[in-house]
Structures are given as structure tokens and as C-alpha cells.
Length: 316
Image (tube, rainbow, N blue to C red; front, side):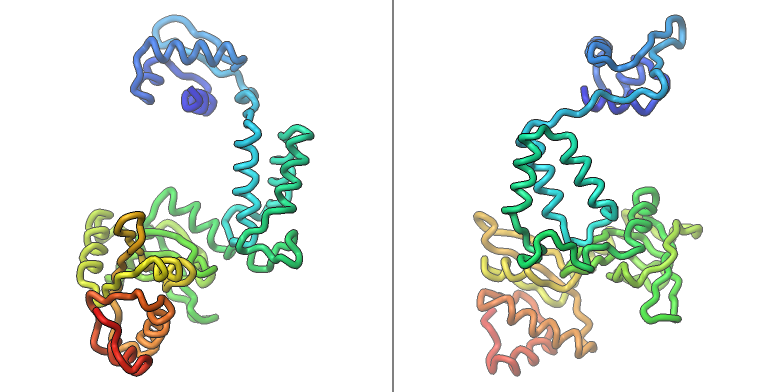
């Protein structure tokens, strides 16, 4: 019924048939839901005759939302856990917190304040738990990028790798994600026919592309699956490796959990074997993952670097 209430609240006029089509319910169920909503005080008037239905009185709103004490704690804890996490749309953190506490009773407010005092999360400064670190703010372009992508993923991006050297890109956005305290966007670059990971902080003036897409979304996803199958580095991890992977990993790597109780995992990467700096980085990172690393596939260039680091290649 809550979904029906939201559907109604976004319209000035609606009919029983529209409710039936939207939620795939019978006429009797639609009428019952509307009667229950009216009984709650929702401002509806009936319009008789062919083409009639219901009108929603203007300047009226849904009844106030009521949270149980446990629900309110869950929302509050989720919110305070986001401090210093560079999340989008959180510039007004103080006013949001005040509104959240404002809907609680006095006893609930006391409990929420105490929760805030005793719970410290990973990104909290223990010396000053109420401090918002400078990196709490998300990159300026992130909100704009997300706002556009929910409407259309075919975008025009300005990528400024270094000041004064902008690069205009025609891309299809796949994901936006936070990795190792940095916001990145995964895109398919139509001009270079490559999948790329771009730091959001280096993007400027994002906009919906006016060009015609050269490939469909399904064709792009098929390309991505093909790249994964052709990866030249395939690694299995034990439980320790999984924990260390979650602490730090290069952007864009997806770990698939396997085994009973998800105690093992596997990932694959296509490495550019001519990029010595990247190979050295991966060698150091793979050693960080621990002794439980097993290689199903590895380029010889990376194997040589690991042998230099260890004196012997881990078994695989």
C-alpha cells in the first residue's frame, strides 16, 4: 500500500485502471487500497462519470512517517557511519542530522546521542570523533555525474589529467564507485574502444552526449565479458587474502567469492605487460595479499618480478 500512496502523491488525478496497470493488481484490491488510504486522511476526492477517477487535493502531503525505535537507530547508525566517507549529496549533513533527531521522542533522542558517543567507525578520528575530516567532501563533479547518469549513461566528459590539458571524451558510463578512498568512474571510451577507470576529481563539465551511440548497451557489456575471459592474470585467494583484498585493491577489480562460507575467491585482470610501473605495483600488491595466493594464469613479465622479490615463485 505504501507504493500506491507514493504513486498517488505524485499525481493530481488518477484512475482505478491506472493503479491496476501500474501494480498489476485486481480492481477489488486497488479499490481496497484506495479506501484504506482515504481512511488514513489522505486528501482524495471522487470524480464521477466516464473518464472519472480520483483527484488529489493540492498542497497536501502524505501522512507523517513513523519509525520504530529499532528502525530509527538503524537509520541513524547508517548515517553516522558515513562520516568521512566522501559520499555524494551530503553537503547538508548537519541539517539532515537535526531533522533525523527531530522526529524522535525525547527518550529516543537521548539514545541516539549516546549511540553517537559510543560508536566509532573506520573513518572516524578517535581523538576527535565529531571532527569531519577535509576529505569528507566528495569530489565536486560527483553529484553532477550521478544526476546525469540516472537519466542517460551516454555522456560527454572533460578529463583533465593535468591542469590546462583537457581531453574531451565520448563514453558510456558503467559504474561509479569508491575504491581506496577515491571516487572512480568506469566507462567505455567509444573513441579508443577501451574500458577505462577515471578519477572523478579529474572530470569537468559532464553532460549528456549529443552524439549517436556507436554500440548498444548490450554490445558494450558483451565486450566487457570478453575482456574478462581473455585476462592474463587470474588469481585465487584464501580467507586471509580476501580480507586484505577488501582493505586495498587496484580500481576496477571484481572479486568473486567461492567455496563454502565464501572462504575463497577469484579475480582476473588484463595487464599491459609493457607497463613496468604497473607490473611492479601488482607484484607488491600480490605479495601483500599473503601466502594463500594461487595463480591460475600469470604473464611471464610479472612472474619475473615476483621471483626477484621472493627468490622463488609461489606455487600455482
